[in-house]
Image (tube, one colour):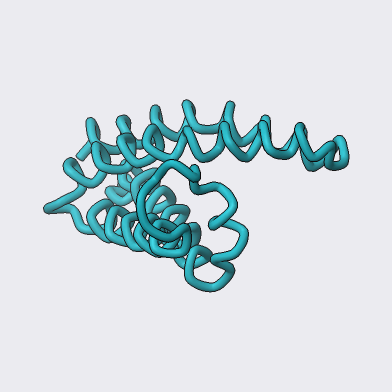
Length: 127
């Protein structure tokens, strides 16, 4: 008997990934505050909480089969939307001359965004 949940595993993993990331915005907001570009209106903490709430909402949309297609698209757009913050982080870490492993992790985070977008779109397409 084939495992009917197997095609949905990538969706559940993505939902878990986004939920974990969203929760960290509330548990450790300071690390995310530094990623918010100065030119955005309002406080950095408000943007941190808003992006965490967005990640939690998208995670819920992906977890529910009825909203999974829209959730996958929203996740892809979210990953594209946070890209400027990741660029800022990488450039800030270079400017501050932080340790090589820390700087490498920041640059890796940039390259990881595109596979995340692809993953989200695949979840959308398989919904």
